[in-house]
Length: 463
Ligand SMILES: [Mn+2]
Figure (spheres, rainbow, N blue to C red):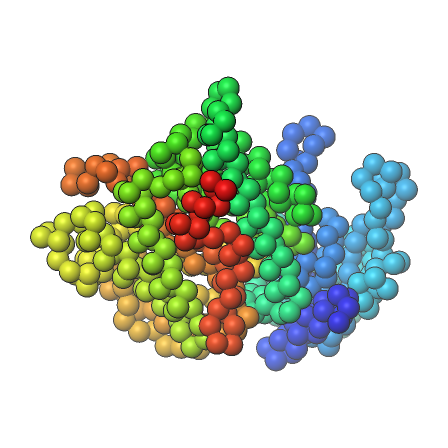
């Protein structure tokens, strides 16, 4: 299938969803450009929804989809002067042929064309709370339509959130998307291998100033980019030693020392799709016994979560499976004293595990690293549950996993120094994260080009 056809099919699916919801018209801008400082912008990143429906990455573009299936694109006009500075623009004339839309206009015609497109439509759909100023822009266009009601035009009567329609579509990845996600996962895995090997090599042959977190970040970025990745999918975390216990630490300039662990959470974005990998490894290539003890618990927790990631299971099942292994590990190692905390079920019930494991095990992944998609099962009834603090609430059961969904599996253990915490484990932070595609029978880990097994990591690093 040509890529144009893929985007046409997705737009047709949106039109069908609008029709099923009673008709109307959907409009969707891409992301805006953001200035960084004088004359310099932040690297431009298109809007994921917009790109999902067009494959078009020029700024200032808009897409309009009518419930009848008719599609209209607004894009920057051809401009020889601007194109000399900023690069070739597609332009509205070439857009229908290239992108398969029915009509195309210059963005300069937005304010004149949009009211005409919105007139006599039952409702208007756009993404809520994702583009600053969008709702007032739409209001301005509706105002122009309303000014014409005496001429017989009708104004849309309702606003609908387009995100709901698009989120549900994006939650299920098609073959085109899966192929890109696999490639992104492979590139990122290679980058982690490279960082591990560089870490051990630089500690074997010390450089002036020592091995720093940024040295490993540079290896990651080099590997991403040389395989065609446009950007990192998120800011890379390279955390030396105790920094691993800071969940949103970034790569800084801390020194990596032999005998300490390094946690790297980094993934590239490739052609609009993310990857998200975390590995924790001994900076010098060999785990200490205490590090290895906790590491193996996290590996086992991840295995348990992977086993629970298959069609028919719920989104929360991998988390519950990982949690049980982690909680048992906390008791076995004395992180939680058995005399005080009881057995594994008591720990799960009391929430005492939160001292060492305070985040969830999974999130959806796709175009966005924390991708869109409902985490609860649509159409199901709320039932008694507990919130993050263990308080009883009513909520819908978590989403039933189905083929085509992509999620991370990322258990961890983070041990900050504390009075009743065995000293040998202080400042050890471990997380292991892979990206799983739910398949017909189970799941495919798309990021296992870098190992998780402790022995394999040691072999890879000393090799
Ligand atoms: Mn993640």
